[in-house]
Length: 127
Image (cartoon, rainbow, N blue to C red; front, top):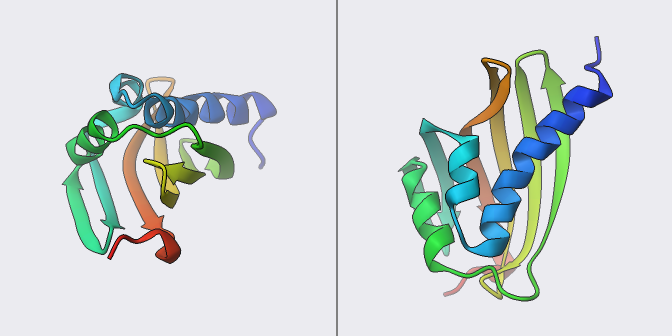
């Protein structure tokens, strides 16, 4: 059964916390979204990042998004208490394009992110 449109709006609003943090270079919004034990996996300029979501917070707080930063949120799926969101990012830090996948769980009536996995577009890797 498809979730109601209101649930899609709630998931999108949750994912906007991620986008707002990245766009503003301030992890405070993302910290409202991610659980304390959320995990991160991805390659940044060819180096594997994995482990605590704290690394993402550090990246957001130390690299400004840049004036040309753009993002798009796509809700891939919602299945009652689980949602998958894809976030497309262009020109983070003025040069990097990412595709992020966020795994959200509905906990105590609120959508929280438990995992983030990402891909850096190969043509934006700094060599």
